[in-house]
Image 1 (cartoon, rainbow, N blue to C red):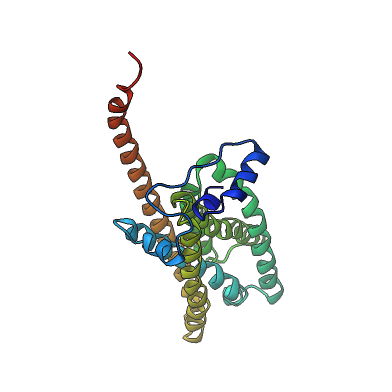
Image 2 (image 1 turned 45 degrees about the horizontal axis):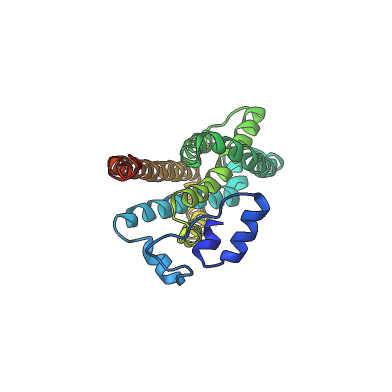
Length: 253
């Protein structure tokens, strides 16, 4: 509803508010409803917001590099580790099944602990899982690691979008999420290219290490962005608290 109000679609927002018996959000002051898309994009770089925006973009880049790099080259990399073709193809199936489970689990967990925290932790666990795949383990243990890596990796990237949505203002939320996803797509192109270059140079054993480093970088970027947002929110609340006595003095004697 906040998005609809910010875009000037107050009638639609009003229908939703009446349908769910909730209060209609007020339009943001100091900004015209339905502002054009370029103003929304520029707002992502005003003041100190450009740092936050770049952190989200870099986290998304590393996340999709990891997602598409691993998904593309997992069978080839696993065969390089000595596994048979049938087992290598099974890894892809388990990886994607883990992604389905991960989406369901991450949504519930992030509701309780917050999307920024879960995204950062999930990327750390993904990096550990991807690195472990470079170690030849018993087949059953490898199946488990691949499945858990799929659980954490796919949902970690989705939690970036949830974090951006939470931390953005209503009038720039759609633009912020869209551009974060778009910048991440460069990583989706670079990841398979990087894996192919390493394999072509007979350095396939470095593939899992490179992808694990991408996961660690996304963990760092989303973690810093979350800490910055939390600090700004605390400062804003502190400022409102300091101004509260001035407003409360106007009450009845």
